[in-house]
Image 1 (cartoon, helix red, strand yellow):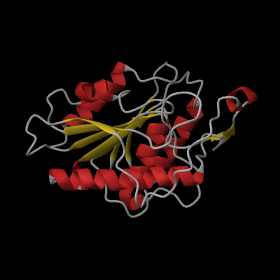
Image 2 (cartoon, rainbow, N blue to C red; image 1 turned 90 degrees about the horizontal axis):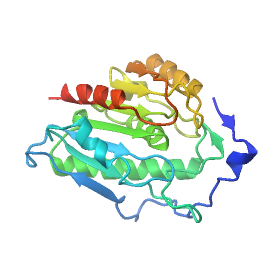
Image 3 (cartoon, helix red, strand yellow; image 1 turned 120 degrees about the vertical axis):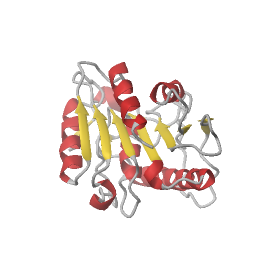
Image 4 (cartoon, rainbow, N blue to C red; image 1 turned 180 degrees about the vertical axis):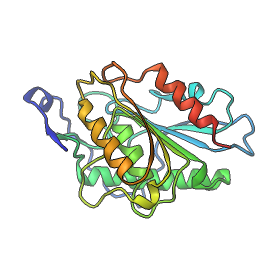
Length: 238
């Protein structure tokens, strides 16, 4: 369900670029951390940052999740840049829970394109893809992994996000069935309230995802226990 922003929240809204067409768009900016055996990685780990951050934000988390460098790991940067505050956005926020449609779909198409190209370059199938993210990045990880017609990934790691309500997108049960999902939401989150985490759990379980749900007593942040749980999950991908 969606919640309208308060007047204070509205003051933080930014004007996004007019970029909508992905046909000729350049690759998303990224930082890559190659696998220890770059010619034969065990998988691809992709992390997506939250609103107003960039490709550097979650880069240190890659080594925490995959300390043995078994996977090729990458952080991707959102395509939209506000006119005011620094950082990058996957979509405009007007109502929490309901991304701006055109920007959401443009970001998702770019993610599909770039992730598919990375997998092809690495000689990997989608069953070797782990995709996760924080806040807006969690929303895009869910949306990208479980979009209609997409192959099942190895695992999804959404932290402090939600299952989006947006026109022309819904979870594909065939894409989600049996996929391990490490879903974490802070019980004290003041930005995206914990009810969004409860709703995401219910929706993902309903379509057959293998959900592990964590609700630590934290705010809008990522805790080390979640990172260690992600490490354990990723370590099972062989």
